[in-house]
Amino acid sequence: MALPYYVSPEQMMQDRAEYAKKGIAKGRSIIAMEYSDGVLFVADNPSASLFKISEIYDSIAFSGAGRYSEFENLRKAGIQHADVKGMMYSREDVTARSLANGYSQILGTLFSQEMKPYEVELLLAQVGETPERNELYRISFDGSIVDERKFTAIGGRSEAILTLLRKETSETCPSLKEALTLCQHAFERGADPKSSLEGLEVALLDRTRKGRKFRRVPTPEASQILA
Amino acid sequence: MHSDNISFPHFSADPCSSFYQYLASQRPELLPMARWGTLLPQQGLADSPLTSKHLPWPHGTTVLAFTFQNGVAIAGDRRATEGYQIAANRMEKVFQTDDYSAMAIAGAAGPCVEMAKLFRIELEHYEKLDGQPLTCEGKANRLGHMVKANFPMVLQGLVVIPLFVGYDHKREIGRLFKYDITGGRYEDTEFHAVGSGGKDARSTLKEYWKKNLSEDEAVSMALRALLNAAEEDVGTGGPDLLRRIFPTVKLVDRQGVRDVEEPQLAAVCEALLNQQQET
Image (cartoon, rainbow over all chains, first blue to last red; front, side):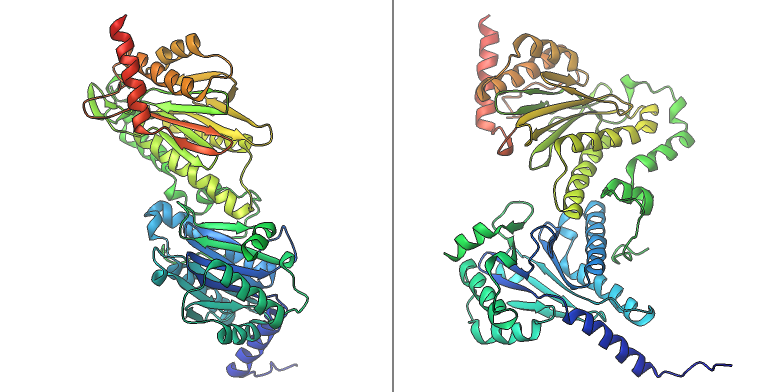
């Protein structure tokens, strides 16, 4: 009779973490960066129809790296949660902080209880009425959550990109053009030297917009901004 | 379930991105119509002597819509009545539902406002989940389903009759849809008005509507129809120059939905009233 093997909890968690990290390492990267009028999202995404960045609520955007089917499910759950909450209470009561908490709960539970952890990393941002009230959250496969300032990145090449960005950014809040230039350079040098503007997906949470702040920036407009 | 927790990703066999369907399957207690539908018969309101004339809840009244040169116009008065009392004189009955559509409602005020709110979330929810907005036709059909779901409440006397207008980017025209209480959806290419003063508004529209009305003509015609309805029907409020209360008029065209501003409304209303004085 085969005896069940004993696997220590430490070993099990380590194996799962390695498995998840391996999956995420294959995923392309995404940067979120604060600029003077809001938050800029740039994703390394060659597809023009399958989006990696999307709107969750009035001033909240979501982005996921790793396995598409998994972060897509999380994105939908977030939208459903936000719309229900906004209907029950008021639109201002839907916050990125509570969504980030919710995601952290889900990913934490999946990581410790399911056979296979989710191979995803999430980025959640909320544009505030003033630049000081912007919020950026990075949530990992195990549910750990980091509250970031100025910029953050997720995906396979995120470490390289973050190192580059830390060197290049200054203390002052960049304009949209400066922020987009920084992100494009970071992708060129940190991820893919052949990366072009066509291969980037760009979206904004623009404080100056009325109502819903999220807006996609098509490639022609992005090149105009850079010009 | 604590509302602060995101529910685990919901794997539904239902492929449509409808917020209404989501609520119906996951959070039925939040659907206003479902809740009222089960409550009312128990309380015996269905058999109560309350008739539509003496309903104890506020009623919305005259709303209208018609096509013009650039798109479609939608307008409504501001009065809500509760039996023979005026419940509100600044009520909003015309709602923008997304960038290119708007709806107006006549009937019991509470459910009306709730339906408009739910419909707006429905359109936004679909757009976010699916990555692109519904077509004009799709929006009109969705609203039809919601009116149909409201039918149990209609039997209790809580009638909600909407008008829906939207700009169709594919055909490059403004479109207008009317509904019956069973959710039947009918497209109209000219004009329509519903509510207690709907008949009076319709006869004015019939007289003045023509193809390719200019924007100014459209605003003036909308106000004229509401003015005439207010004169004939107690449930419809006319413009109140003293307190600066004017009907709502929204125009929907290629650029989107916009409100006709108060100074323009005031000027047109005054001109119309003066005209009446002279004749």
